[in-house]
Image 1 (cartoon, rainbow, N blue to C red):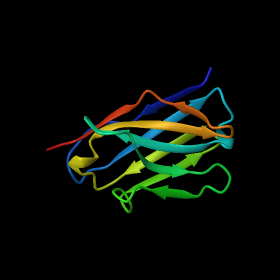
Image 2: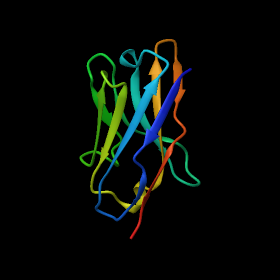
Image 3: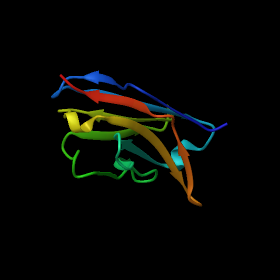
Image 4: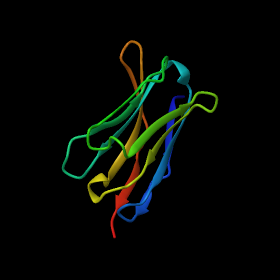
Length: 117
């Protein structure tokens, strides 16, 4: 069955770094665009970073540009989100998403990131 398993979340001080990982299985990972979303309490889920399946093109929300980097390793069926210079407003549950042709969407269970002193 399809699985997306996020890891790497936790508590970090402002200015710190975290690296999120999302291990995928049960579908053709290399043919899917991969995305990281986040949802803070009381707010809508928002797209943070995306990487395409063919060209590996990336895009980011304005709020994280220059601080976050998305990457993928198709050999390991894993997508990463390197988060640097973290701010309290980055606190949220971070979700991994796989988007394929035919508007297929797969979601992970989420991992909590808390930025606090």
